[in-house]
Amino acid sequence: MLNPSDFPPVPWRNGAGTTRELAAATTPSGGLRWRISVADLARDAPFSAFPGTDRLFTALGALRLTVNGTSTGLAAGEQLRFAGEDDVAVALDQPTRALNVMTARGVCRAEVVLRSAASPGEEGAVATVDLGERVADVFVTDLSGD
Image 1 (tube, rainbow, N blue to C red):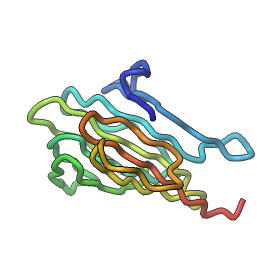
Image 2: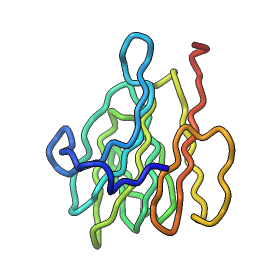
Image 3: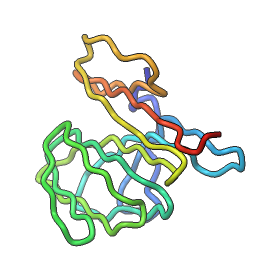
Image 4: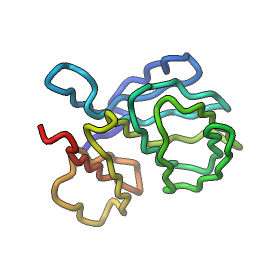
């Protein structure tokens, strides 16, 4: 099980926040296949662009995401998918965190299942993330046939 506190925070590409990269896999050519991270959201901020990726964002506390001009409020545990090149910003009432799974478009698709830490997990997760009282099982489906 991956515990985000065991990983050092690193700055976002755009310097507007920090994240903790927990696990990643690459394609045979060395490109990103998938990446699992937990972002420390301390203030309102724009997200970094990741062209060619799809993102599955799971809020771990209440927040608002604006994606290409459309604002969506998310409660803890709610998810939103968007493209890595979309114009995205987060607005907060208080600091929180988010689980972010990025996949190479057309190569993989991610699913995140949140459960109680006391509940058993499902088989086949590529990673399990300790979120305190909750646990996230991350599943990645190969779309490429490799």
